Image (cartoon, rainbow, N blue to C red; front, side, top):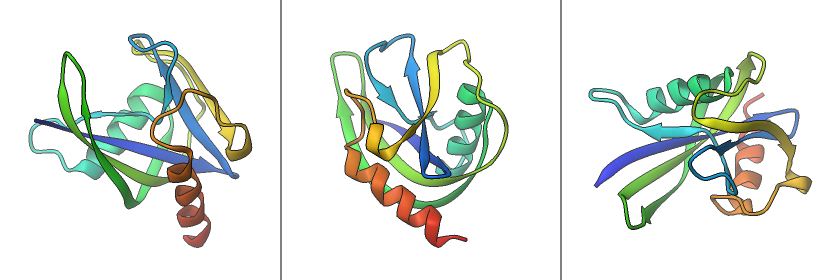
Length: 127
């Protein structure tokens, strides 16, 4: 089973979401599989930057789940992250990258909306 890590990046009560080219109807936080010798936190920072151009600080692991489909079997860890700097941009993997308020999160979205609300609380408490 592969391990992946996602970063729910929060800035001014908004979260950064990516619509990937290979899954063009689903919005999700940036993230990906761990590289050899990399920690989950390092993966989050690398993937957030690669997919969106944003630099973030990882604050806390808030959720994990197993994802299975016809092509893969992965255990995914979700982290609350604070925006540090950068302007959003699409990567070769991304169809679209946007900031969304919690009240206007798109459907479909992964993980569940409650996880995003928890991330906002963690980031607010970090200041």
